[in-house]
Image (cartoon, chains in turn brown, red):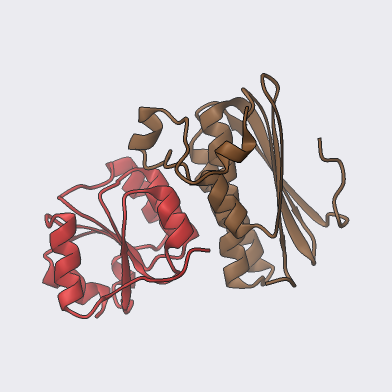
Length: 149
Length: 119
């Protein structure tokens, strides 16, 4: 588990994600986006954060029995964290490869499962950490800094 | 070209968001993959898709799309449209045009491809 953050969180948001709870992904992305807009954050950064939340939460809903999405907001950065009790990722490097997917036909029919989730998160984040243990679960932490890009 | 002009030109039916049809459309993005929309679509473009589930509408909101056109006569379920009416002002339209025809018609009218570099 990654146990440190580079800043003291100022606002924390938390969302529970159940198995196949696909709607929480879009809903939580929309809710965090509205919060950040109210805080007056820059539009392109908000979009990157919303994309990370959407993809990360969707991964939990698709692949895990349950998990949590946490968003830590400070003036300097936002960290999006998902922690799940899923099957784990046997090969993180392979999972990061664009086009690689283990999603089912049902997931693909919804417009997901293109093997772009983790690559999208990587593109949008300034910092990405993934720790996964097969049979135990996955912890993902993606950070967007407000001063870097 | 405004959404209202597009609606008339391709014979689309307005499902919701009628008050936002004066939005000016310069670029469009046509796609049936949610991750592709999240990765590559710019803000303030028109989304053209044959997906009609609630995910595509959440996605359109997340990426700040000007509106969504569902092609091939497809339309979201009524309960999805009702939720959008309550919570959002995003215009949703449906057209009998197939994807290729819809894109071709709009392209011929000067709507450009959304060519933003991936995030």
